[in-house]
Amino acid sequence: MPKPSCLNIGAYFLIVMGLTVCFGWYNQIDSLIQIHPDFVPMQFNTALGFVFLGLSIFGINYEYYFAARCFASLVFLLAFLILIQYIFGFNIGIDQLFIEHYITVATSHPGRMAPNTALCFLLSSLSLWFLTYFPPRIKFLSTASILSAFVTGFGTVAFFGYLSEVETAYGWGMLTQMAIHTSVGFVVAGFSLIVDSQCISLRRFQRLPFLMLPITSGIVGLTITISFWQSLEASESMIRAECVNYRHNLISEGILIMGVIFSIVLGATIWLTQKYREQVMKLKQAQYQILQLNSQLEKISYLDALTGVANRRLFDMKLSQEWKKAYNNQSYLGLIMLDIDYFKNYNDYYGHRKGDECLKQVAEAICEVVRSENDLVARYGGEEFVIILPNTDKQSLDAIALRTLHSIRQRSILHENSPISKRITASLGGYTIIPESVDLSELENFMNKADQALYEAKSKGRNCIVIR
Image (cartoon, rainbow, N blue to C red; front, side, top):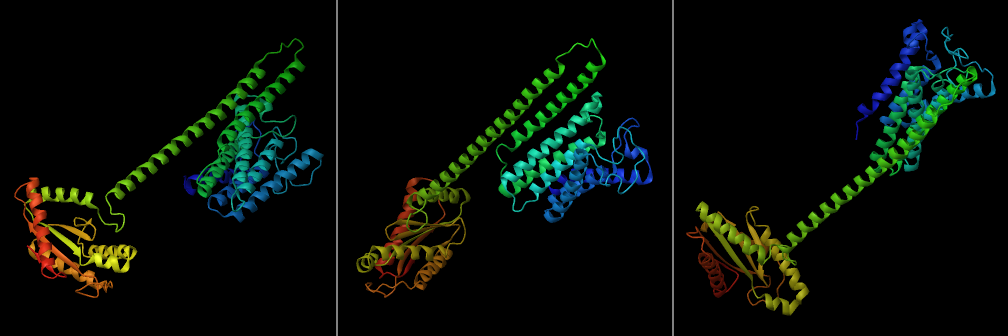
């Protein structure tokens, strides 16, 4: 999403243009007021309206909504009073309130902005009001975008009217005409407001109203088309009145038909593009969710459902990998096998639910001793656990086994049906070796050594450690 500094380019342009024209009026610099001596000047009130419009857009971009609404209200009041003067044919004294106008090219009332200029300001101010509503609503943002589309369309028609020398495109009847730089200002203002409405929608709702862009684009196209058509019709009517033998042509009708078709096609294309993009985003989201689920399923398939530690499947894979790695690096590989003492008695006395809780606590106690991600704690079956310990010699293996036994004892899990202690205890057997071969027989022998050590610990009365 564009940053406020990027969004403010249009606001800066309107403010600078308005202040430049105001400066030109105060200092009587004609080149700042009118682009060409034959073109209509930008009226002082028009320049002031652009300054207020730019300040309001600036306020919206930085979320100064109260200030933005105030400047929008000034623009609305100015445009409304100008239109009232045109509609009812009287002068309320605001045309030359700030300065006396001395350039009156194509101006019906000195100092008074063109009626199409006032209409564009009115639409712009309404758009600004909808944009400053807080908290934002989708329907208000859509309305603001549509109003801004009309402003962009009217400004574009007037600008190309100057380029094509169709006077009726920028002037209504014998009234004051819209200046060429005024038309550029409204194109910039309308476009800025459209972008603002979309950015606010993305910022607040993380999405655009589905029909905002298609409708906005279609309205811009239709506004330009209909305005051009009306301008050509008006020009043709004037020519027809002057020429008796004038032969009617179908240029204006052709432009109207082609413009309407183009606008509809443009809106439909944008709608289809949005639809396609939405489907692509849904597919990507679904693909991501599937990958996440697959990852979770894969993770679950390697974990013991009760204790959350690795299961027998992952243990077998990890042991085979670490055996090959230890052989290649000629490093020690240690294995501890652990059995909870008299666990059957525990289940018989406390019940299987308590037994499950006991297994969970023992698994947690063992995991507290694990040194790194390379070590692996797994449930081997029933009440038996195993710990794979790469790079662990006999002395280190003995220390880890001692800490493991101590960690289980610290849990103080009550076991009143044990003949050796009133708390849960465990027997541990361990074995460490530098592999001399990657043969499976060697690996099985390695596991048998650890299992024999565990058997020896049980034979010694349990609750002890035997390391080979």
